Length: 342
Image (cartoon, rainbow, N blue to C red; front, side):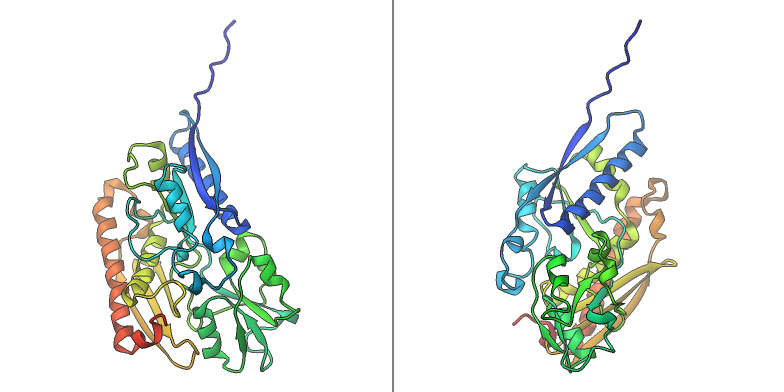
């Protein structure tokens, strides 16, 4: 009588994440995607098992406005340090939280398919933006959302807001008439029912990278490792190109993620289209720029037989150039004065 062979031990990957409900939910999505991608590529080999490691960040510990904490990077620095220090193998962030500059020691982020990038109004009594009464009090912690709100409805009172999704929603109907939150975040924690209207990105441009996730590993990661293979499988070229272009706008304007700058890109039909906007803090004035370029078929960029490496480099560079060009158009229209942090 023979006994069944012992299955090979799985490859364990430690994934660093913030400890909030939203961050943990997002990280579990990435963990599952990595495990499934590895299983599909190696059905008879050792499994890939992803374990979550909770990391406390300055942005989570403090209730101060983000601009007082330094703005860009307050939610990612500690998680990145865990990867660089060997405590974790991979990190997951909301892409809009990443500083625009390259991170020393880390590879460019892998970007899975994007969720809905729009913002949502969550108002009392089912109200939408047009039906909020004059003087209604709307909460948001983002200068971009504040400026866009005041551009559309200068008769509203906009107040600062921090906290997790549930604590923000709990204030609607209490001391606030409405709050603005990201559609993607609401959907990921099953609270999209709280949205009373989804805001048109043409009038209410989202933050660059909103709705997308960034997955970071060491630049020295072995390209033949199981983790590297799984990462390559979950990278979504159309999303990556869109957010590269959006963040190039931000980088060129030298504005952190709390500055009143919005951008939204989309790859469709072999074209990358980008719209970018910069607002004065009070929403009284703003400037827009629009552009598009041809790109490779985004869904085919991962096919080595199609010359994938050359296509990725070419399209990535073109996306960055598009974002930079639109930022220059915004600057020519006066965006430097509007978007520069005070």
